[in-house]
Length: 487
Ligand SMILES: NC(=O)C1=CN([C@@H]2O[C@H](COP(=O)(O)OP(=O)(O)OC[C@H]3O[C@@H](n4cnc5c(N)ncnc54)[C@H](O)[C@@H]3O)[C@@H](O)[C@H]2O)[C@@H](O)CC1
Ligand SMILES: [K+]
Image (cartoon, rainbow, N blue to C red; front, side, top):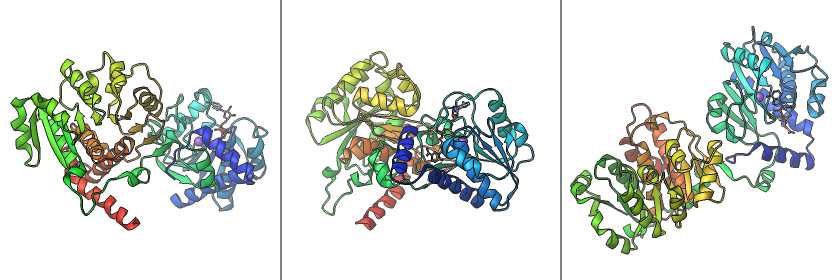
């Protein structure tokens, strides 16, 4: 259930299921029944208005209205266009509706305790305007609870973008698998609670259409975790070099603590000699080395992972050092100033990426590096990963991680507490720590985002970045115990 399907993939899954012998009107009945079950699970009987659009999303509405009416609810049904408008499966279910049909209008919202939004689903093809826009505004300003079927009308299922305006739902019931727009902002903000319901499409069909986007969940990457064995040696767990800035030393201290908490064997902070004592005094387990020894450090292959950027400073020196590190083809995480240092010349950075590399920009940094890449976050992360050859992670409440081969994951953890200074530095440290332990770059980026999110959700209000690394053992233990149970 962690796959995320585009609307085209969903149509394809429907088509294959219908070809396999389940009729389209049965799928629609299943879809409508799933929404009905969610409604009666959430609300006791009350006055409900079911608002039906001209396509199959509206068809689902006829099923929902019928089932609610049979269960004794007081149901009004509004239809866009005339009663002869529904086609195909929707027409079949419209014919089974024995109640009255009204013209779709704001009058249907007056007096309703619950509104069921079946206006547009996957077929939203253009912006919502005119009368329907007025209806959307009326719904959003009413006190009625709102259930959206498949997606809140006005939300683009593929991108999460709002087309003109969109309904703000309390509950969205979608079918088979989630769509990108359920997790990408601003769509996610319109969905309310998300229920993903089976309507009879088999897992086999989903695997045949080869989805390459997932909700970021341990199922995706847990097999790639390198837990230490009984005979584990610290050098089996990597030796990470964290490059510390001369002015903002807090950033790399957070990076270092996070990387060490992620399980890395050894960690050395490399910096200007003037600030080495600051890094050294921070924690007794941290080693330090002056930047003047860089060649010697790089000649030692045991130094298998590098993280640079947080608090490092923007400029030519940073750029040269990043290029030198990338030339080693070892695991590398580039964040913050390491990215911004290439704002004038991003192609040099892309060209230099050879080994396993993760770029962790926030939106501003992404825009500086890839100013010509436009679209929703998923599309942009994928395009940047393809261009650079790196795994690209665009941070935010809807963090997207994309690999150069097109695989992508979207974070669905709700942890607004992570929006605080230093939180991104911690994330870079965790990801690099996992890569130093041998994890593949896309897996490490996904796992890092998940660990970071879980820490944020667990710690909650009052979180400061310093809390996150020290909470990692709690979450890692959960994963570790789960891995032992499986074995
Ligand atoms: N067999 C299937 O394909 C199934 C489909 N299901 C439902 O069918 C939905 C998709 O159905 P459709 O492809 O018919 O698409 P929709 O029902 O989402 O909408 C398509 C219709 O809306 C019109 N339209 C699009 N944007 C508009 C706008 N901004 N203003 C005015 N009119 C606009 C289109 O011209 C078309 O008539 C899914 O979201 C889901 O709810 C479910 O019943 C499960 C089975
Ligand atoms: K809808």
